[in-house]
Image 1 (cartoon, helix red, strand yellow):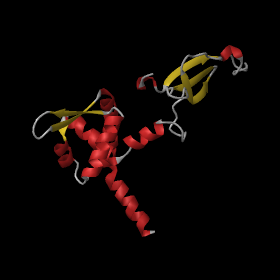
Image 2 (tube, rainbow, N blue to C red; image 1 turned 120 degrees about the vertical axis):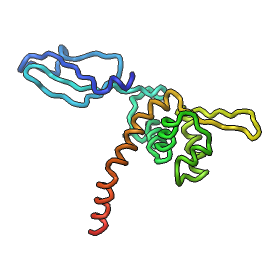
Image 3 (cartoon, one colour; image 1 turned 45 degrees about the vertical axis):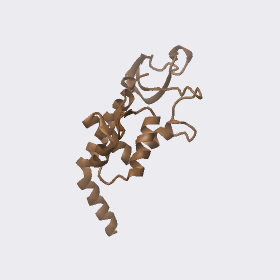
Image 4 (cartoon, rainbow, N blue to C red; image 1 turned 45 degrees about the horizontal axis):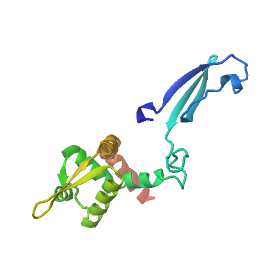
Length: 177
């Protein structure tokens, strides 16, 4: 159930005027799929499906809109500004020490950086390696899962940097009214 399967299009033949939702047009699958878009093209139906991950602890489909789904908590973690900056910094630099991260991410407090790193470690996005030296040397590195998060996070950072002037203009305009 990889992310590469999102938005897969499936074309199913159907006769014009036929009962399009009858048994002969049903598709049986072993995975959960969510219909994103359905359109009729001539006598064919074009269906865009999103593959849906099943949450192993509950057996239910992952759904960030559901208050009970654990994906909501993960989304809360990865959407935080400090998480975005930590993941992006680690993607750019590779292995980093705590002090290097602190210097790279201007304005982050020691408490927030520590909380963010612990959260990312507990969710499996990074590894924390303690080297037995005096004083101990601690290094952080993205895991494979963390690197998979880096692309959308980097895109979000780039988008914010690209559109900052438009956003500031909108804020100034809203403040005038």
